[in-house]
Amino acid sequence: MNLRQEEFRSLVDIFLEEELCEGVKKEGKKYESGGIPVFSHPLAHQVFYSPMLNRSINGLYNAAINAIERRVKESRRSYISLFDSMLPALIARPYHVQYLHWLWSLTYYRYTPNFPGLAARPDLETELRRLWLKTISKSNNKKILHVIARDLWIECENISQYLEYWMEYFDQSTDGFLWMNRKDKEGYRRLPDTVTIYRGNCDDGGISWSTKKDVAEFFANRGMNGSTGVVLSATVKKRDIYAYFHTPEREVVVLDVGLLTDCRELSN
Image (cartoon, rainbow, N blue to C red; front, side):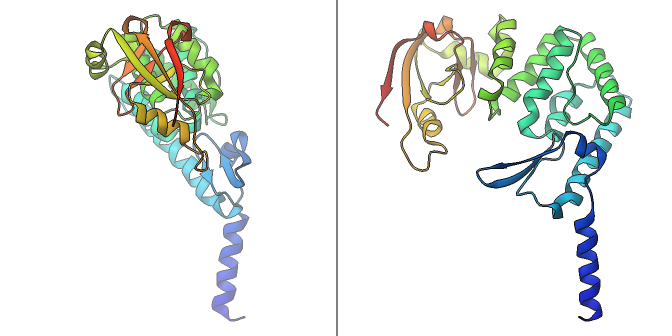
């Protein structure tokens, strides 16, 4: 083996030998999903994991911590952007509901579960708690919270895993208009008095529907290895719709499935 090869092996050994830092080890977990190794951490989520990626994972975690610290130290009147855009961008998507649960519990109950990703930094979590309470005390706390909740609901891919949380949020917010932005409300007002809705029969408690059949077909067939999924159709009175989201999916949220009529399975 020549000198260059020895140097290369030495560098590889150093790379492989790096251990996960304490902040990552505290909350990180390894598992397999469909035979694919995953390392899951709220601030450093890594698919196709191997020990060779430890350095990269540590880097992601430290970069996220540094970004939060910098933003917290900035002297500004409002920290809304920290909570509604920066933190959701830093926190891995599978942990977004845990993040929302932290905000929701602090807003309504004045207690918090653990902030995802900060188990090794209780000082930073304490500061975030103080800033959130300060932020919602200066404006309409329910509106700010629901703006964040709307966006996280729309992009949520694991509704069934946290369905109990979502139902708690919906039940506590008796006014579905709190969840809707201006375009959502305009779209809702244009709906007819009786609305035909569709859904792919997936495990989300039956509360999420669409006014577009092709959207339901997509969700019915997604991840089913080419087999045909089940598409359901129903009608609902406009007044019984809890919330309408004017996204490309044209989502309709109906909390009480007993309010649906003409429910049937369509050929797909």
